[in-house]
Amino acid sequence: MPGTACRENPAAYLSGDDMDERGLYNMNYARETGFTVIELMITLVVVGILLATALPHLETFTKNNRLVSQTNDFVAAVQLARSEAVKRGVNTVVCASADQANCSGNAADWQSGWLVFSDFNLDGTVDPGPDAILCEPTEDCVMRTNAALSYNTSMTTSATRLRFLPTGLASNGGNVTFNLVARDCHIDQARKITVTSQGHTIVTTAACP
Image (spheres, helix red, strand yellow):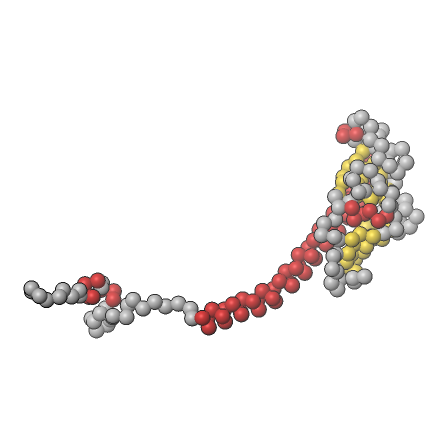
């Protein structure tokens, strides 16, 4: 009617889903729900507690797995040297190597890497010939190399090299023990790797030094 203000009917914008069980429109349909500040603070506290509890265990798990992997790499190199000595009928050597090309001659360099080679002329050094890549039976042959140990894992021993005879025996003047220790060692994150005179490799878990 003239002079009468036009009023919008809220019900015109509501659907049947906005009606309650009495068939009346619920005018609180637009009310939004969410977290209160207190609820958010409680959630953050709980998440913080869970992270503080889980992270140290995750770090320990990671360090243990890394140490196991590094131990296995070295043991595999030693076993390769022994098996190749028997297979080829020549002396083989595992030595500390900082450049993965030559023996360093330093017992402190094992954590910098090592290499495995056949020592045809028994001089304890790598003397590859022109066909070294073919690993001919009449010349030295580099069979495996390993880079420096990651994450500052230390490796100590008194020997600069291991030598295996064609019989599979080790020619090192007795048992040789390598001590592998994880950085920031905790409880038993260390391994003792012993190479016996018979050429066997024994790995034991050790306490942190």
